[in-house]
Image (tube, rainbow over all chains, first blue to last red; front, side, top):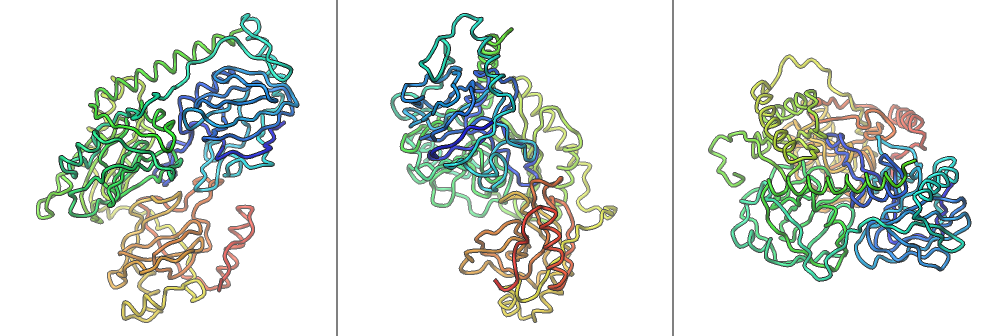
Length: 339
Length: 256
């Protein structure tokens, strides 16, 4: 019972919310770059836990369905085709056995999440199904999907998908979608990037902010920062004015975090993302607030962002507000699957 | 703080790091006593099992506690609690603890020339014979200062001062998995093959990191380490045992 990969995209890998609790062994939590979209994608197909999804960067793979499977694609605005008809995103779609899904390119955003009823059924490694590409473990044998890969789905996925779709149908808002699929008349709200640059990303001061002079600290929040193409799941490299540190000696390596903005000697900042190393010795000028990490993850290479400095209280309130929005949304989606 | 002159004593402090962590700073330079204290504090905070705490990371001179909090109130009270817990633990953590009777973690190493491409250069640079380099490396009081860089990678301090050598001027394109290498007063054991600039003086047959194993890493911060010299025959035997335990073909042959 698998999803067969006919063609690989740019980079698609199996992800969940990652493996917390092992950073003291230099094992990074990893997991989905945009955790919000991953969580919502799961809720869209009626998954109630942290089932693994397929994270799809920029341009997606082509997949062949061997059984009926209830899926949802959320996150970046892909324009997928199901047997040459458009497949709606941000909503559950019951794909029929034999159909082919071409995920295509992301028109907006960077990472999409394809959830399936029951989740992608790879074996957990260190308590997570997420793929850690630099260490080559987790997910599909530690690798990105390639042409010929088979994404395992749970046993009885067709039956599970049918029963979940039946619950949606009883809600009275389903609709047929050609021969290859059926879907619903509603959708989940999407994270949409602002149409014009720069995209505002909020930060709090980093522990070494005072190792930068006033000009560098001003440039951090005034200048537009272009996301460079060499950005990846480990970190986003930004191009802009050089930020000169006044540090007279090395920083002793310390634990870094998701969203840490570190500045190597050349002065071009790097924002540490899901697959970062767990420790670092470059000065940390800022930290992206938790509430904006998913937004930042969705900024594709070539677009520009601007940092806005906020207080810790603001960051706390923003994180709470986001958690509340995600919880309300997943509860609403759960209601759609109510028996 | 980071630019404070070294002549002044460092006052430990706890600071928020982003909105999901706090960090205790014990020193602003590599200091073995401060590091040992940091690891003790990290262990004490870990066993406290505070609700919401996800990771406790003792590094060279810091302890960072990562947490997950849903509400702003939870985050604020967690920060206050961790601030107090870190300072209390610091107060009770001795700088050195002679009562620590845990045996060192034994890491077998074959120092034969076939596994030690840089041993001759280290001998030349230090004015010692290759045998003396090995003897001093085995006799050093090694301790893991920090885990970092990659899963299972240990920065090991305590190298005998006579073995102080810089990194190689040109990094090697590939260090084999298990390479035991020295530079900047420290030893590293590479869990996997990687490019690297450290001086390789031997190799261990142990799989230093295996995600299928519990715990996955042979070493963790704070561990004392005993490098135990073995010959090539013992290396071959142990490498094949390690490989069959991991269900993989033996890795690394001498002379490659």
